[in-house]
Image 1 (cartoon, rainbow, N blue to C red):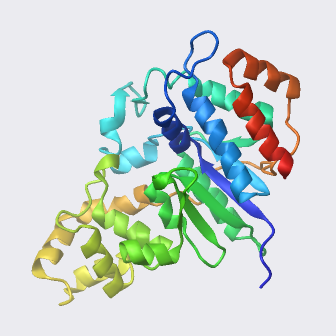
Image 2: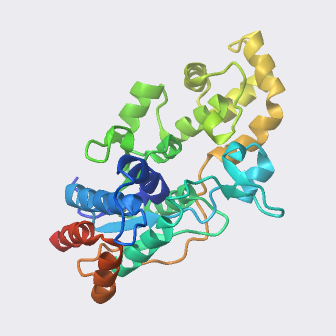
Length: 316
């Protein structure tokens, strides 16, 4: 098979700008003293990624809602410990460093001036935008190679060698990304596929997201059960049938966690059908608003980083 010439790069934007914020010194400031370390770091990341991976299409995926109501309704503890202030009638505001919050609108503005697609959907997380764009691409008769750049292991569930869909995991840094494919899932987690990773994540739980999991069933045991029964559905069928392959303790814990296991898959699995509108995701080789971009770069002291992105785009 000929090598695919189309490549779609999907960036988990918040994951990257948080990484930039903590990775670039807060002494990096605009002429007026406003910290712009996250903006500069993210722009440098974009330049590095475009230069190294040469995508033909690029989307910055955005958290319009970091704690969607449908997930909170299913599991009220979902991300509850990250809520800075509960607001009646909402899922609450995310706790975010004071010097990062003002930089987020600057990031949105510079992306618009560059002409790089940025997409969020009310009521959904960036993970859901990514999941939806992956599902759309996979459904095409001739899909592009898809690479997802993130620091969030939840997106390992999208890995699919047949397309391929790969996750470029930022655990070692943006210049030394860990490429996660099905072989890596098998080697590191003992599961054969992206969907199997999601099933394992349901069983294991994730304290960082407020997901309790099944007590006593950690990552290794979850992977063994998936290997034996094929999927979470297979494990639950074995539980209900009294399969002797489950120990008495495992069966007891699975029974006691029945309510959680009913709702958790819809929380853990990214949405494949969020209402993402049509978008032009072609990588621009000419910026959308050159004059506006120059003015922004001068105002915020970002000229060198903006130039790196513009130069990287021009190479395409």
